[in-house]
Image 1: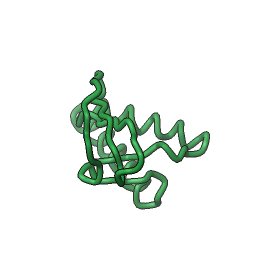
Image 2: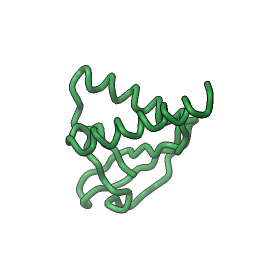
Image 3: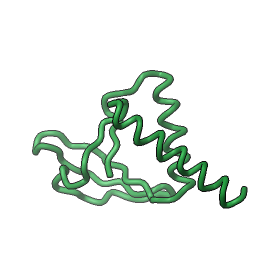
Length: 94
């Protein structure tokens, strides 16, 4: 792929994510909203932490690496989730 097509591809995926957040298809939370972050592990796409939210609920939070490949893969996975209806435990954070 050329640099121009790579940039267009990246812009498409970022725009898709932003529109999905604006339309409330994806819940958005700031990373600072979570407390008691405890590192669990990492993989090729990012890292996983155990976190608490509102001091009541405990979640595994997956933070993704900021790369064109990872963004594309996230969008494609979210599209699959959309096809089977979003699940309440699927959230997006920055």
